[in-house]
Amino acid sequence: MFNVLEDVITDAYGPEAWDSLICMAGAEGAYSSLGTYADTEFHAIAHATATLTGQETTDVLQAFGQSAMPIILKRFPLFAEGVGDARTFLLSLNSVIHPEIRKIFAGAACPHFKYAIGDDIIQITYHSRRRFCDIAQGLARGALSHFGEAGDVSHPECLHSGDDACRLDIRWAA
Image: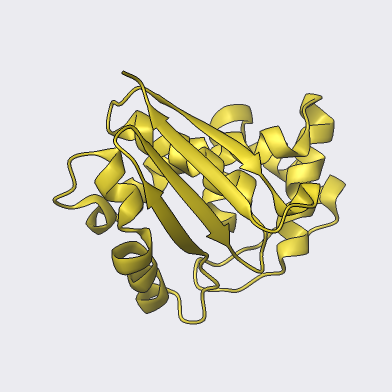
């Protein structure tokens, strides 16, 4: 994710911005795609980005997730191979995508999702020790956009707000 974060930042603000954010965050800055890095560094870079842009950190993480989706799918086209819609893609996270991520990145700490499915809605309960639910919300928006679908992604329950779990509601437009 650090490499994708660097791509998102440099695409939006240029390579100098990435270097500035690394300095502001007090982060290492040299991230290998096969390395494992502390979540605190990721959060520090997101917080530095929020400070620099005048946004909330949650908004930065959501925007990152949304911007990351096309980069991830370009790097790993297998994740969406044969998938024609966002619903199918989102429902494949536990069974297809995360096992593939674990094959590529041994020891990856992927989240686990529980689903409640309705005609025009999927409620996803997000479980992860990493607590990157804001990124998950952005990735869900990115999935809707990737598949050209209109809808809304809300985050009505969150561990960060004292709820028992994080829940994302993906509702398709009528």
